Structures are given as structure tokens and as C-alpha cells.
Image (cartoon, rainbow over all chains, first blue to last red; front, side):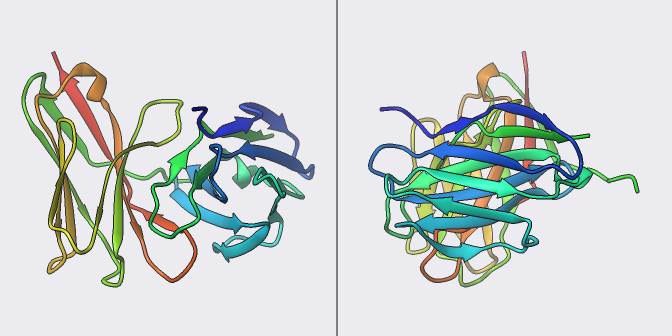
Length: 113
Length: 113
């Protein structure tokens, strides 16, 4: 059974640009969540989607957005990139019920220059 | 300005010894807890979870203990191996509905040969 797949794995963007990251959850998983990991702040929750609806959102500015498609695949977008957005962006998936095990992908490494 | 990285607690143990990694969680309403292992350049890997109606749960070479009175979680790894070297995170789930994890700062475990 394939795990959580994230693309691209590595990317470099210029300040002011935007970026879109993609995530394919484990087959059958309908909940997809996103986390940002930085050396300074650790792992922080961005948002979670279930059945194409955002169920919860972390404390990030509106430049960070996401969506989920009918096949449960998800994308997150960061607009007007800032240097501080450089981070590992992690996608995680789980079955629909709260408390089900959450599995992470390998992440997308974003560097903003 | 210059960002300050998180100062990760570190634990060094000899190969073959047992290790105990501790975690204090913040929210007394949290009812689901997970331990993750993260190797360099990879996403967090699920190790073991425990719900608040349990005090102890065992897996293969790992045991998680939960003390709700003092809001403390621990991960015991038996007969540590070089492959156990990684950063270990505890995570708690709180709030209604959404699958949202709040992560601890992590502990870096180093296995000495």
C-alpha cells in the first residue's frame, strides 16, 4: 500500500512568488492535513481537509491556503512568498474518524531566496 | 533578524541499552497521543499511539506510558539499535472534530556503538 506522496520534493522560489504543493493521501484516507516544520518553530499545524472542506486552520496568515479534491488529493498554496516561508511542508493523511492514526509523507522542501 | 533554532533535548545511549524519552504535554483536554520518529531528511514516521483511557501500550520494542495526572508521556525503546538514532516527537490531539496534532519540540536520540 503506497504511503502519503508529496510533490515536488525540493523547490526553490524567489521572494514574492507563489508556490503550490501537492499531496496524495494513502488510499482510502479522506482526511488530509498540512504542517510546516522549521528549525525555529518546530512542527506547526497549517490546516486540515475532509471531504473537500477545511475543518480546521492553524495560526498562519491568509497567504497560506489549501484545497482538497473529490479524490481526497490535496494542494496547498503560499502566495507572496517571504524568506521566512522556507521550511519543510508536510502532508499527513488519516481515515475520517478523529483519533485515527495520522501518517506523514516525506515532505516538500521549500527554499525562498 | 537571525532566527534561533529550537534547542532539542538530546539523549545518548549505548547500543543494546534501553532508552526512555519523555514529553510533557500542554492540554489537559487532549485525549489522543502519538509518538513519531523523524530521520534526517524524512517525514515523521508513526511509532505508537495511545488514547487517554489507557496508561500503557506496548508495540514491538517500544512502550508508551501516559500519566494524565501530571500530563506526562514517555516512550521506552528496548535494546536500542543504530537505526533508532533520530529525532522523536510526541504529539497530542485536542479539540473537537478535526485531526489536528500539536507537537512537542522533539528529542534527538543518538545510539553509540
